[in-house]
Image 1 (cartoon, rainbow, N blue to C red):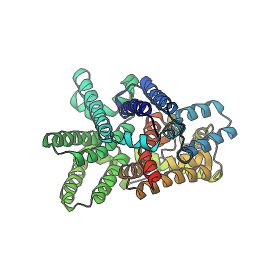
Image 2: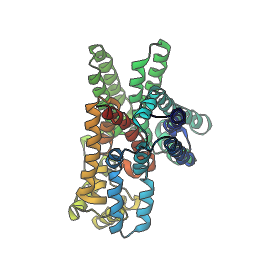
Image 3: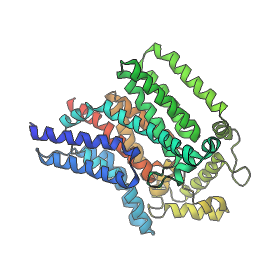
Image 4: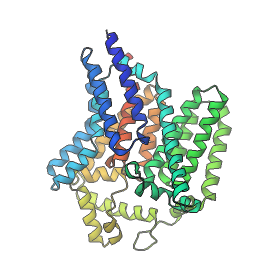
Length: 407
């Protein structure tokens, strides 16, 4: 039986988790401190009661990192390999920390779920709005902001710097979380506030004009409506989707990004567009993968191998800008071959199976969202992506864990 002292300790853990949901608004140097505080809080709590460590949870969610780490031993560029393993360490840190939590503690943590969702949604909303207002009022005109705001966030925000693709993902996930907040609300004022934040976040999504997160959001929104099994949601759903499509067509920058899909060409034959860049990268990556399909090139050498292939093919545009694979599945194949990709599919598949079994809707939708975005981005190899992916995966799979133990 867990002691009152342990239950007091879990209150601190709950506060630390709340801080993790607020990571979006923290500067880069404080993000790692917040994660460290969370780990220390869980460890101190664990030492105040009989030791508990769920090995199956840890192995399932940390195995991908272990497999990637093994590829380090056949990499020539050990310095680069060490840097990448450090950047990807969230893949093993979060499973280890969450595995120390018991079923009772997991239940206690999830009592605060709505609060956590509020923290994240509000944080993403404020980050976008305050950043826009600041640069608009101090440095740029409105037309300049509409055209270059994404670039401004990437190069002129110092320790708050973030690439627009990751901010687009945050906007999409915040909107997803808001659906579950709205389910719990009775106050018309609060409902209006949440809907107002959602509309604002959708406008920022259109401003960043990133196709992957936008498409993924529409898909998970559709699945959310299906999960609710309420016919009264059909009209609001159709209205929202139609409005989003109309806005996408009406806004030139966003419309042009989707029009690119109608004429996909290799860079040496067509225009330099984001779609053509990816098409050329994928063609290069596929040929490189076929040269070492089983083991890949190792975490230290996979990117060098890709850059060399650009040079051999005469793709100076890609080589000079050192583009990565822009597809997480291709990147995993380059790192560790088929073995690495299979491990990734197994660990996400196992989490998805448990999520479906225990009706863990948020985890289901998050896994689908990330799976879609991974077709166009290397989420697991940038700290801005890997931290949130690893945190959300392990946090929401905690619910599947304690429900599994009850059955």
